[in-house]
Structures are given as structure tokens and as C-alpha cells.
Amino acid sequence: MRRMIDLHCHTWFSDGLLSPQDLLSRAAGLGISHLAITDHDSVAAHMTISAADIPDGMRLIPGVEISTLWENREIHIVGLFIDTANTPLIALLQRQQAKRRERALDIGLKLEKAGITGLNDYLADLPCEAVSRNHIADFLIAGGHASSKQQAFSKHLGKRGRYHSNADWCGVSEAAKTIHGAGGIAVVAHPDRYKLNKIKLRRLLSEFIAAGGEALEVSYSNLHPEKMRNLADLCCELDMWASIGSDFHTPNTTWMDLGRVRKLPAHCENRALWLHPRWSGTAS
Ligand code: AMP
Ligand code: MN
Ligand code: MN
Ligand code: MN
Image 1 (cartoon, rainbow, N blue to C red):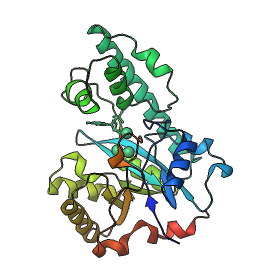
Image 2 (cartoon, rainbow, N blue to C red):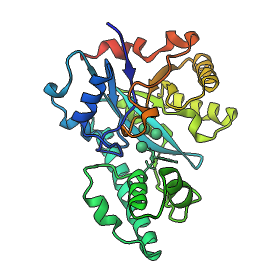
Image 3 (cartoon, rainbow, N blue to C red):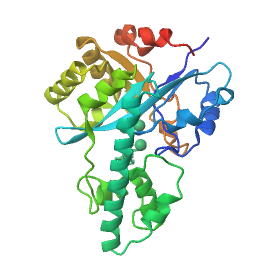
Image 4 (tube, rainbow, N blue to C red):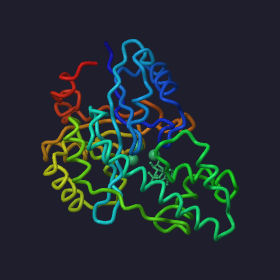
């Protein structure tokens, strides 16, 4: 059977547009054979999916994407094959969700001071469990305060934005340990998006590995082939597993659609996550 794998995507339980069921239908239509749903700081999607929702022949992998702080940078750690009922994991996700709500309230107050009201009501109507700046960007665009997502982040919500607010996320090591403790494989998501130089990226990865982290996303949307080769080299050098994922959020961004990622470079094919013992060891 042809394998088409996507190990990173979002539903409306975080900042994705689709319900878990619609996401699964779309994945099936695109020929995805193995899908991990990895919402930001939430496993609610997995709780709502019943066996009947999973399209014939598809394997659904329980996942999550945890926001962390490392040296003052936000680093995203994906967890795959997690036990979604694991108590320490659930407790960590609840703390993260509370931080998300606090941050949204703080941004709401900053907006009100600038005369922009209604954020709380807007957020209350969303189906999400993990409230995201992505939702706040939508609110700003709908109100005519930003012309695009990019602009909403650069002008308003990003580190240098007018309404920026910090969240005190857990550390990288805590996320890796918790995922590992929940039986999962911890993966550093989209490693080139953090503006880390080579030395810092290696330092991050050595801390991550020391805490039980195992894998690196090597292929994902919008990644230049040369950067992908560099990440594959790093994966080999550090003896890590290689993951792939689109980071799909919405059908509107066609360049980030489900499964729309390059194949792993040949020299790291032997590190592909689907060769990890956990992949075949879990009943599907
Ligand atoms: P949060 O997890 O609340 O910090 O929000 C970050 C989310 O917003 C990411 O997961 C992306 O989905 C989205 N995002 C971040 N930066 C941008 C950007 N510059 N343009 C569009 N979406 C972004
Ligand atoms: Mn997102
Ligand atoms: Mn991410
Ligand atoms: Mn993501």
C-alpha cells in the first residue's frame, strides 16, 4: 500500500479551522494513510474522535504540540504516540491552556486601552480549547485592524507588536520529559523557524535529548530543500529520528495542505519515524 504520512496538523480545538471529523475526511480525500493530529496544548480532538470517524485504511496517531520557552524563545515540541489519558500530561496541558487564557485576557485589556473592544466575546464563541494568537489575529483582521495574518503578527501580536503579551510556557525539558513519560516520542517542531544559529540549535537539541527527546522535524511546509538537507545531516549526526508534517491549519493556505511535504532526503531515510519501534509496537 502507498504510504502518505503527515505527523503535524491542527483542528478547531486549537487554531485549526476544521473539526476533527472534517480534518479526517479531508486527509482521506488527499490519500493520507497515517495522520497525527497535534493541536497546540490540547488533546481534546482525540477525545471526540470515535472509531467510526476514522476512514477505512487510515491510521490515526495521538499527538499534541506543546509551546515551550527556551532561552527566551518559543520552541514548539510535538508529542506523538502519547497516551492522551496520562495524568501528568493532562495536568501540563491544563496549565498551558490556563496560561493561554491569561495571555488572551491581557491582550484584550491592551486592545481595550487602544479602543478595540469585543475580543473576549469573540473568543467565547470559538470551539477551541487552546486559545491562540492565531484566533486574535483573525479578530483583528475581521475588525479591519490588520490586513493579513502576517501583518497582525508583525504589527500587533508578535514580539515587537503593540499588543504583545508574554506567556510563561513550560520549559523544553519539561515538555520532552512529560511526553516521554506519557509513552510518546518528543519531536522538535519546525526547527528553522526559531532563528537559532547552528551552535544554539545544537545546544537546544542536546538539552532536548538529555530530557528524553528523540526526534526532529526534517520535512515540513515551506522548508527550503537545502535547509532540509542540513536538518537531515543534523539528525544523522545526533542520532535522532526524522519526522515529517505539514502543520496544516486551514484549507485556505494551499501551500500547507495535508501531506504537502517533501520526502525525507535519502541519507536519513533509515531514521524515518515510521521505523521507530513505537510505530509498529502500537496497535492501530
Ligand atoms: P500561539 O500558539 O498562541 O502563540 O500562536 C501561534 C500560532 O499563530 C502559530 O501556531 C501559528 O499557527 C500562528 N502564527 C504565528 N506567527 C504567524 C505569522 N507570522 N503568520 C501567520 N500565522 C502565524
Ligand atoms: Mn498554530
Ligand atoms: Mn508550531
Ligand atoms: Mn503546528
